[in-house]
Length: 413
Image 1 (cartoon, rainbow, N blue to C red):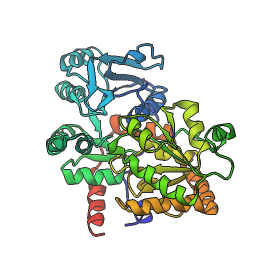
Image 2: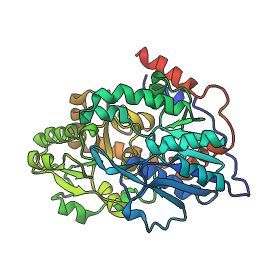
Image 3: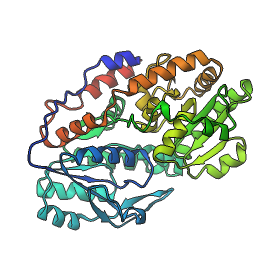
């Protein structure tokens, strides 16, 4: 099934009503929140910044020293936690069911969204069920797949069973794409509802391009600059992005490669690829400038449920090379707004990267189209949809019907 066919399928209709005059209360429970840098934290930050205009928003998350002085007009409840093994820059919250019961008995929310499935998330679902508070969950990260990259593959099946039980206890499981809905339906999670992601088109924009930044990278106007943005870790398949760059460099020796982010593979990559430019973790305007100052964005991941960085690259006007998965499958079209390789076809992924480096006219066309398509991804509208799903009505019929249809079509390919 091609992207055009997928786009023609029905999706769950969500009619958005204006928020009521009384400020209703939404509680969001998550293991990660800014200043942590990852897709889940970014999604929840963008969401809460829009929700707070119309709702009273409470965010419950593990305590981070750098967040103690947060002044974002949100009600933060910080709980104890510790680093996730193998993912030390993120934490999981300890169980705190009694604390949540007391908190929500005194100040009852109208709805609760549990973004992560750790001990903190389990405590929240349990407390909601006891207090009869509507609770929805989110599926943001394929942790059951990530375990295979950290020598914990034997846990994958156990984690999957836990996920099924966890999500079936909630009213809805919000997922970012129809592809994820189909995958969860196959697992046995039958209450999925597609809620997509947006991008800040004011922050991420081609106008943020800096010739001074390019000069620092050793690039001039004719130099193809590749960029990867994300965690430098095995589950992100980052070595494929580096291999694609190497192949392109054989034909275009002046090409450059910029890595934005950090992670456990950074030291190894530094040794193996001395010509690669490490920009480290970037945020805000600096991140936007890094995107816009590059030309070709490489997204090699096969484990991401979405990939917010794809939308940021689109808004920044980059030529995108990706597998036909996640955000790319949902929002891009091969040879129209990106070059997409079939899932797992690493050789074709590398060929696409080379094509963009060697064909300036193709690169220009794809960049323009990707930027234009990003303009419809409005966070304000998505925030309204999110609140409606949590607060205003049940989804009529079986929420995962579209997932079942997508699975049927996918298995016939």
